[in-house]
Image (cartoon, rainbow, N blue to C red):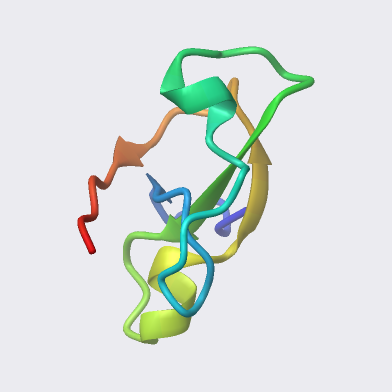
Length: 68
């Protein structure tokens, strides 16, 4: 999960840009026991902006829609 001052960007992707199963139940859940893949919206590093780790779905963040 991004640091305290960094905004969360929900991506549902891995570092390489591949879709992950971590999507907060297809972005329909806000439950604490469900997770989503997110990145750090302020990161300059391409890997971190898309994949900073799995985060509980009850956190607020931007939703980035990506198309391959």
